[in-house]
Amino acid sequence: MSDTLIPVTVLTGYLGAGKTTLLNRILTENHGKKYAVIINEFGELGVDNDLVVDSDEEVFEMNNGCICCTVRGDLIRIVGGLMKRAQKFDGIIVETTGLANPAPVAQTFFVDEDVKAKTRLDAIVTVVDAKHFLTRLEDSPEAADQVAFADVVVLNKLDLVTPAELDAVKTRIRAINRYAEIHEATRGDVPITKLLGLAAFDLNRVLETVPDFLEEDSHTHNEHLTSISLSTTAPLSAEKFNAWISHILQTQGADILRTKGILSYAGEDRRFAFQAVHMIADGDFVAPWKPTEPRTSRIVFIGRDLNRPQLRRGFESCVA
Image (cartoon, rainbow, N blue to C red; front, side):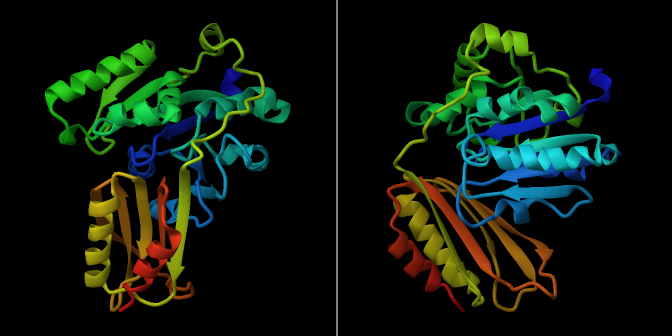
């Protein structure tokens, strides 16, 4: 029976841990299989969809809500639609927002009869930021939840920590979840065979640890965390943007958990993908803008006590 069910991998991990980088590796690796990808975002403007590489996979985006709260109905609807043409897919990958507790996501594949009849939860893969994980445990219960339900932990960003710091993180992970396989990585460089097609999710084991797993969840998120999304159709100056964002991250980076954006620079036909976790920033040019689409720059900040008017004025001052 299980051989006829479509395997579903839930890819989770806290904001900025490296989920999208890992997802891009999966989609570009030469594995000869086809996956449907469902992406969820926290915020009113979608950015993650543009951060995922162009590929033959089909990407479905859900935003304006946590996948474990308001959009579970959307998840059921999208999976149900995929099942009507299931022969086209070798598997489904669900990338959750960095603020998601994976338990309600996993519940979906057991409590909805239509979904349950055609899919099976293959594994919950949790990406952990080795640099910031211990800090996240102190202020974000979701970080511990994501590890607790993991079948596989990708311990990412090893290049940013010392051996002693790495040992401390692994010790905490093992204290939360002694069953999960841990794979160390720098930029999500884990073999695909260690992530997909594992048949690793064991409902009985989960029920032993969390007896109320299949009951309705009514969790809430940190009320101080907010998402601010900004956009402009005017081309940006790379120099102005770099100066502004560097100042913002240096002065407010402790409160900004995650920054990500797709930017249109003046005189440049390619999109610029910008990402940051606290004060650590990265960016590069990606796919060119399509001739028919508006070149809209979008940036999303997720953090504590963010000042929307101040951020909006700063972003608009970057116009070329």
